[in-house]
Image 1 (cartoon, rainbow, N blue to C red):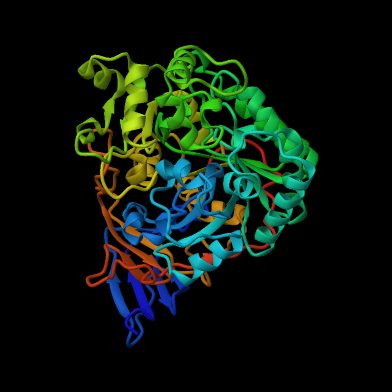
Image 2 (cartoon, rainbow, N blue to C red):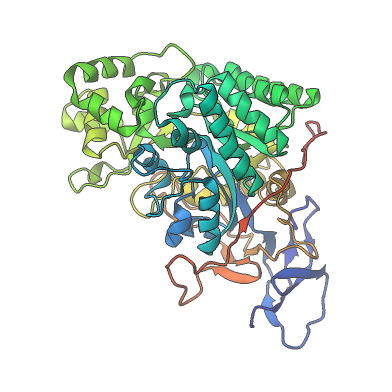
Length: 548
């Protein structure tokens, strides 16, 4: 086969280990790196790729994706391939397709984040893993068990504490999934139904994760005014259960809380010094994106999206809900409508002809155009879209984001919401080139070697999957870029623009981007594979050292 033997010659190399940039050729045989060195001689029958003036990098790992359903919609993964990502970690924020039951309310609630669900229903998480494996995905896949469907499959979308029998059933399903190769459990403590989970439930599940030597991942309850207490809740699970921890999209939101990230990182370092194995991920943007239902109080979604729609069509319940939308909330959850403000909230995901013109526009502007109060406009638009609406919220501390980028135990994750058309957050298309071109090369915030390692070999090691570096014996997952022009082009005005200066992406030695001519769009045509993982390695011991 034409891709069995290849020699990439004449380029520079950042190999993903943290080693300094150097001139090197790379020989690939049978989908793996066979040899790395200067001026390698060509061998008869191998394909020569001229990389003069180019830079070879390992392909990237998206530590925080929402590609669970997109794996079955191959073109939905083009934004990943187009920025050099060939490994995606799914199941984040507690969202996922499995385990699932038909008509349980989970699909409607999660669709704004995951996109359309596959037709197949997966009663057990192992069914989902098997389906991903059969599908021959476009990317390599690492799977977390999402807490929301795990919980909903046992007790529905009802937001109430789990009883002992329900806890045992959840723990059994989780143990089965982890033993089948899932890398850990992901919590979405800001979202229904996970926001109803109390410490007893979370600790019981964390203990299962610990017994299997896997990772507990969390979108913690609050990233604004109660960030410290929310982080402490999560760290206590690692301390008491003895499991490894990973904080999703670490950030500080709300202007009143800006400037507090150094204390948060100090807390994480203190936990690591105590022996709690905690890491995090970050995206290099100051806006987030999620489902519009999070702008409403939690009681409105106690049975999922159907509950929210019923509330918004009942005059008395709607009045109560919108009164709460307009004022800060008591309890652990943050009201972003008040803490950030409707002028910082963009709406996206419109599917009806009469509302598509609102895609990507600020809520306050839409409300003014309609002659409405922003909260009333939000309610009407959520109703018009049957609850399937997303928001882009400009809420995060820019200096705090830079401080997380500099923390050596933070990886890069896009948190992109896969959607084949319409307005999206630019992080879906630009996270990885932005981290390297803007924050390493342009701003000099940290060495390129460190950024590349934390987008390739380091996250794979964290989640128990070999590879991610261009060294002999490793899978030939790599990319060739033009360092003189390489940059992200997606922004808030044009969020779907693809990376500039990316020449080629290889997965297992096979070209996957630009899409080879004749590549079918149907599932089953990809070069990726599901990685079923064993115990993960600890990230301890470590300190806050520059350039890791």
